Image 1: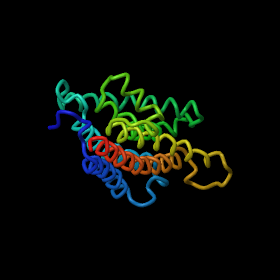
Image 2: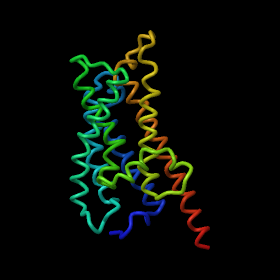
Image 3: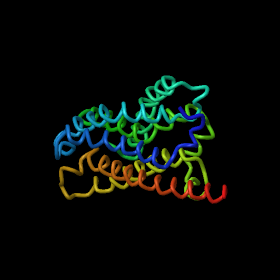
Length: 218
């Protein structure tokens, strides 16, 4: 058990990302090819079921305040953060034009829970209610200013998922009449793609950060 979360190595960060990716891959394998298009609610439910225990366990272990916060307390923060983040994601999506008809409710709920796992839950597990840390997560300054490793791990995938979901929504109003244009299919594709790109970016930022720290030490 580490005394300081900032001592996390690039290898540990990569392992954490691999585990989170494995959850997504497992959900895809269980749902089957094309399930997101044919049955979005089922595919997203499997994402939540497979990804939730991994994300909560991994980022609870990587909690910052190991002295004052036990692993199980961090897990509780993640469990509380899951519906809170889902509500915020659903609210944001609806404000930006997501359909609110009854036939979309179930898919929207599961999509919001999945987005919460990609964006909100990691920070809830690691930082709890630390206002400064949450400001750092939401800020774009992490890409230009040296900062702690966990901020890179959480912020870049979070930003990638949100940006990817936004870009993924662009084809929805077009009259191409393709099944994947339905809510929340293309938005989910965009969010997952952005999340994976964000993972890669975070690892690059962590490697650069570690090299910079070693250079200062030398």
